[in-house]
Image 1 (cartoon, one colour):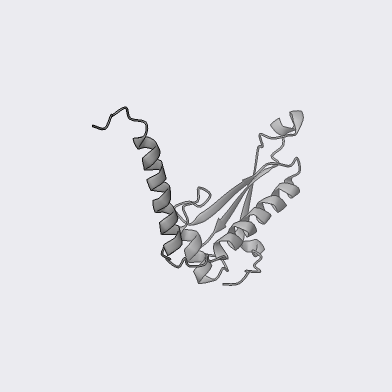
Image 2 (cartoon, one colour; image 1 turned 135 degrees about the horizontal axis):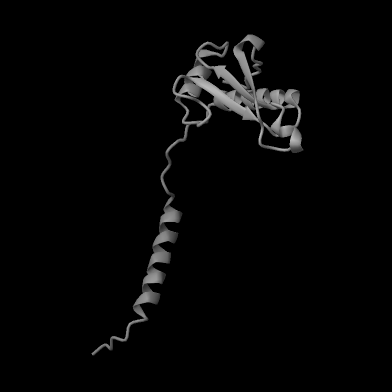
Length: 136
């Protein structure tokens, strides 16, 4: 699947304003500037293949119910935290849309086998030379 140019619809996102633990001085104790973004994968407009990949991921941001929860609290502004949370959601979805290239099994070359055996023989000789056994 090529790059997914996907933007979430506003009705697919649920924001909760919560108290932040980051910068803000005394203001942080009285204003809810951090954001919890909730995004239900199953009820979204994502392609089915991307939904399946997201639901199978072992990511701590994805609950067992198939809801992505992202907490953004880096900024002192609620709007910037919202934008940051949405950007991180899009990044997560794009990572899930990327299908890794299948690995083709290969065999070691003849030369690499020979080099490995020569190295083993050399190391064996070094270790054998450490013993004090005298030959009669």
